[in-house]
Image (tube, rainbow, N blue to C red; front, side, top):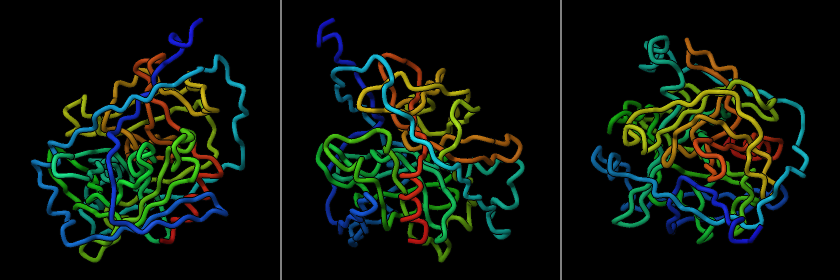
Length: 326
């Protein structure tokens, strides 16, 4: 078996671009890298018109993976299972009046947009999670940090649009004010077990995003191989204009290189644009509520039509603890 044959590909649903104008700090004791966004006057949510949001694409970056492991030799991390309860939207929220007909998942899941240059319009997915501040969302680490240029993307007019639909922002456009990812991700050789980031959003019209959309529950060290619903906005389906769904029982990912211990959800045809969208267990189809325990991360050439995602472990719980009150 030659090395050329073993140069398989791991596909991230993101275009890595440059980022500037930020303050960077690291909590080395917790293995956390965090950034506070500086928003110059040139950075405005008004930039993101319906036309620009519809034009945003997520070109596929395909780094090669050498010396593929044949079997899984790394122990799967374990720890006590923890559930952080989600919350319902305020009664004054429009969602409070339509929850039963649309479902909580519609409002808590949305698209992420950023633009680091005049000819670059990029996108991902994300979702609202519980937090002390009421401002926090979760997405994929590669949607906020460029591991090639070793720079943040979050300050490139980065916004979250919950319940995005066909160019509309029914619950507003929410700019980021702070982000955190694990040091294991923010390096030139990122650990895909930690392709996760939490982002704190600014207030919009004096409201926290949890007040308007509510949030899904959040789970750490959750059991594997359980029924899962994965949501996102892939540009290969409906051009990324409509929320999409994959569902099934994930199994151990066929990608085992670099100590990866995540899961693979088969029969999932989502590609670029869905990165960062939530994986939910205990999902109630009537209410649209569940427990977020992973995110869409990458696809892998040896397992086509399979979305891979990291299972939130105790290290990701530490990351959430860092961000929850910020």
